[in-house]
Length: 145
Figure 1 (spheres, helix red, strand yellow):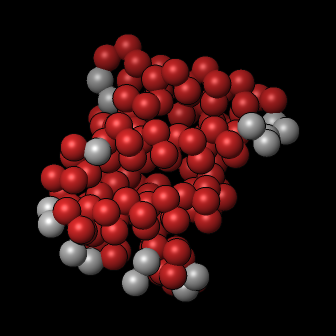
Figure 2: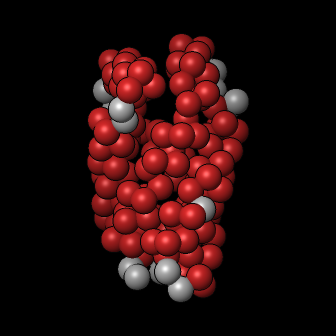
Figure 3: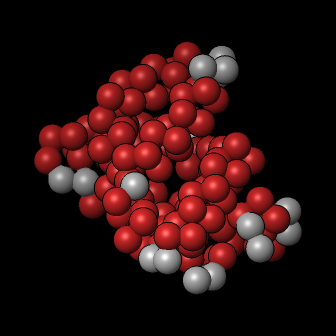
């Protein structure tokens, strides 16, 4: 089963979305240093403006991200060692996911959210790359080995 197929099932979609929220919150909390402080501050600002902003964003992003993630999952499987593939391909995975968020952010009409996104975008690649192993674990949980 692919992520696209899994997301077509409402119960499975809710589980995937909940796990994505958990992974994002864990990653935000784990980021060290000044950039981590900036990320946590921006994340809290997003949450104050819209308490369910993370869940809502995931629901909006998943139709565009799922095919990208499915492609990476298939390539990782063909490599014979998914964990190692995701570890060595962190930059590529991050770039592909950020291309989706950039495209969707470019369509946003919410000036405040767009300004916050732009202020965090410069360090986003490093943060997303750091989260790729957790993302791979999430995919393994829902898509199997």
